[in-house]
Length: 319
Image 1: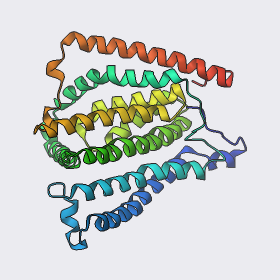
Image 2 (image 1 turned 90 degrees about the vertical axis):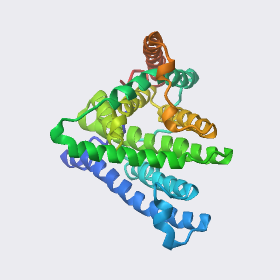
Image 3 (image 1 turned 180 degrees about the vertical axis):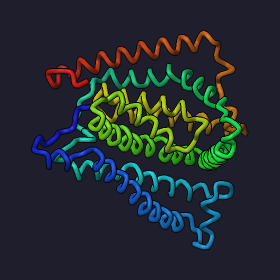
């Protein structure tokens, strides 16, 4: 990431700019945004779907909830928790740091390389999912494991409900909520803000990328998908670190979510469950090796092109 503009002053300036304060401010903004926008989206959802306030509990239930209502609430909550806090932090600290630099130029070939990377890396993430699903905790931690399984099942029911509409209008709204808003919001917050703050804190972009990826995965509370989501987060982090534009990881995130949403949509239309969204048994083992090699080659080329672009734009690499 292009390093944030920093006021170089005395000790008092250094203390005022401590990354911990930026992180606390971001957390407060995210917490406040989630509450305020969540409440507003519930009100809008009740009006739009014609649901009485007395039936709010049923409408929010992951087993009997109203799909349209839940999508409205999900969209509002995501904007409040991810999009607005990132934008507001950028405004609040614009004189000291730049978290979301929308003016960074991007070599056109990088857009195509992001698409190719996400395509060829898919089998790697599929294997990571399989590996993570084999995770078992010691017997002494059985209560924790049961809680993790319960949270996983709850998230799975919510996903099934959100993607249960098999109309094309339902697909469009699902893409807006699950792919567009999630990709923009989570990348703005995690890669744009959290990764930027931690880079200042640890003075190491690589440390910041991996810690952000861990936080990004953990916050989803889907522990049996922790490994692949962490790897995805790290990939998104490096796409930003090398490419310098927040829109590059946003595109990658969108492709990941949109692909899963569309695949789930067509499975649902065929009367199949999301559990059948598994291609691992149809992929020969040698293709996993090819997937790994091609992904590494593409990432190397991405880094090379992005570095050349940075050198031309700024006279030096900013890695």
